[in-house]
Length: 232
Image 1 (cartoon, one colour):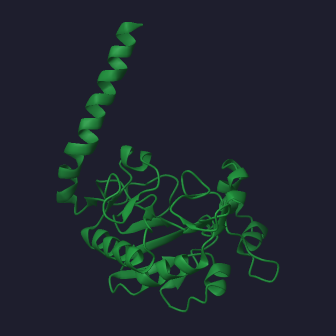
Image 2 (cartoon, helix red, strand yellow; image 1 turned 180 degrees about the horizontal axis):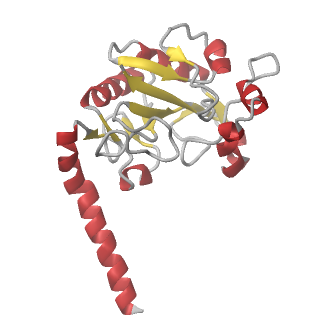
Image 3 (spheres, rainbow, N blue to C red; image 1 turned 180 degrees about the vertical axis):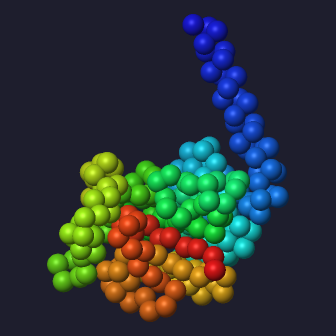
């Protein structure tokens, strides 16, 4: 038993050293840099395991744009932290970041929505989903219901995350439309950002007008639980 514990401990020590000290250096020749492992300024991973699994790598231009957006968000809404979700692996284009379809070239990054604490009525940097995915701000009765449309077309995976992520925590949070709208617009204003994916009913609800804001297609999963941004 002691031998097993020693082997497991050794593996995690070696893995951690490689992940946090060696891989960031090896990623640079591939044109990728790591987003912050922990809170740095006004940005942090929503879940530390994103970094532990090396899913936080982006092109330098995307990192710079994200840092600048985070700074502006905090300046306009003091205390706001931009929580990032999945980005890309550190090496090789076209290597898939499961379950994402396109996070394979360092140009893509998912960002968590902003929320209000339902108990206090104050803005919070926490989210209803521990991983940032799977708890959606669904369409109202008079809004475009893309999820139903895609389901009707046979795309079973479109709402799959909602089926595997517990929904009980949703009641503790309110979708912060003001901060989320500003977050989207700040990314849209960056010249290097080519596309932003968000669910069509939220684009309408938030009165987002940029042509950069697109529908991601039924072959993906729903985007009313996070924002997807990508470089040109």
